[in-house]
Length: 238
Ligand code: FPP
Image (cartoon, rainbow, N blue to C red):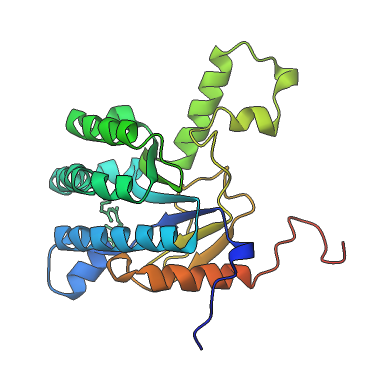
C-alpha cells in the first residue's frame, strides 16, 4: 500500500544518526571510505526528500566527539569529504532555499573545514524553507557541560535557572526539539546525541545501512511517526 504523508501532522524537526557506512562497505569487500562516500549520496537524497515533504529542520549526526578516536587516516578522510561535499552542495542549498547551521565543538575541526562551513553558513543565512544542521565534533554530554560553563560565566542567579533559560545555552537554542529521531543500521542506541533535546522525541530504528537510506525511507519513518500517539506523560483521555 502506498501511504501518503499527512501534511497537517508533520514533525517540524527530524534528527538522524547516520550509522552503518563502515559495515555497508565491508559487506561489499570495500574500505570504510567507500561507505562514507556513498553515505554522502544518502545525505543528498534525504535532504531533498525532507524539502519535498515540508520538513523545517533536519539535524544530521555527521561526526561525534568520540569519532576523533578513529584512526587518523579515517578522520582525515571524513574531514576532506565534509569540505568537498559542502563546497559542491552550497549551490544546491541556495537553489533549495536551505540554511546551513552547525552544532558541536566546531573550533576542534581543521581550519579548512571551519572556513568552508563558515562560508556556506554565511551564504545561506537568509534562506527560509529548511534549516540543515550538521552535528560536528558533537556530543550531548559535551553540549550540556558547555551550557553549564557558560551559565557560570553569565550573571544568571540560581533562582533564575529554568528549562527555558537552560535551553538558551544549548547549541540548539533557536531550534525546536526534534519530534522524531531516526537511527539507521539496526543499532538501538542514542550514543550521546541531543540528550537534552530528545526528552520526548519518538525514536525510529531501521535496519537499513546509511548508504542505502533514501527519501522513501524518510517518508516511511515520517508515516510511522504520524501513526503514533504522543502523550508527553499525560493519559490519552485528556
Ligand atoms: C557512521 O557510520 C557514519 C559516520 C561516522 C560519518 C557520517 C558521514 C557521512 C555520511 C559523510 C559526510 C557527511 C556530510 C554531512 C556531507 P560508521 O562509520 O560508524 O559505520 P559502522 O558503524 O558500520 O562502522
